Amino acid sequence: MTHIPADIRLTDELERQLMQQAIEEQFRFKPMVALKNLFAKISGSAHKAAPAAIAPRTVEHAG
Image (tube, rainbow, N blue to C red; front, side, top):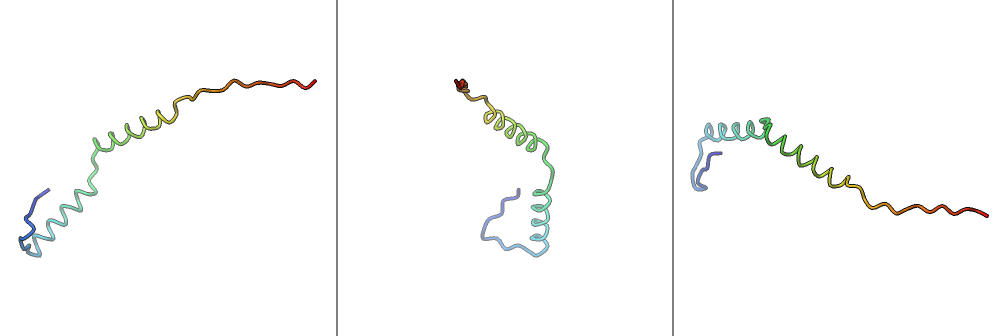
């Protein structure tokens, strides 16, 4: 991203170009970021799906 000092005045054309670049960058597919998010989701699901200690069931007989 281009860093522009806050006190600089932009022409309309330059402002349009910068806005267009920002919009294109926002919607550009980033495969490495997508993979990172996928692995984070999978590892989060794995931690949630860890088996919990199961209490033994007792069966009472009528009689």
